[in-house]
Image 1 (cartoon, chains in turn purple, red):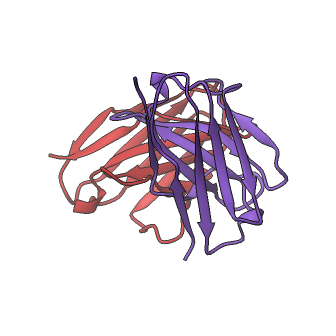
Image 2: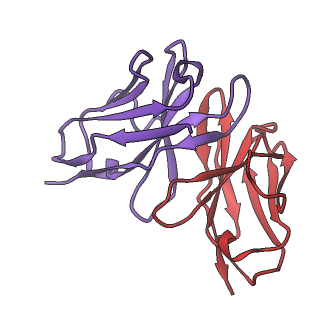
Length: 120
Length: 107
């Protein structure tokens, strides 16, 4: 069964850093584009960042220059390095797999989420 | 940035009724649109990809239609487990945005 499992969430002070991990199992991780999506408490979904199998990366304007997405295909793990954290980065962060390859829209596999709280 | 506007914000219906949810894009997204269902405390679940294709395991009562800027998610006959929040999502040049969500509640 395909699964994604996030870890690394927690409480961090404004201006601090945190790294999230997302371990994949049950599918060929290297073949899929992967993404991070976040959800502030009681709010809607916000796409954060994506990475391709060949390591191209892309970011939402709200995190560009502060967050870095990366992957280790040998470890089947996706990462999100978050620096210069602000209170409005407080959210549950989900990793999500893009449906199939090519020109499609849809994330067909999601992790359970990791809560990041930015507060002094 | 392409903005997705979902309507209505809240939809109150009874089990067995038909639900029609709308998603409008600020500019054409072709058919690069997906629909998700999210229940409290859970991750989103993909229902429809590329505007009209049901994801594996999704019941036939869920259907999607539309292209360009106007999209619809239809639930033909509501079941108790369908009451949740629904989001649309678009993809343009590998950048994604989500709509603000429609809450489908029991009347």
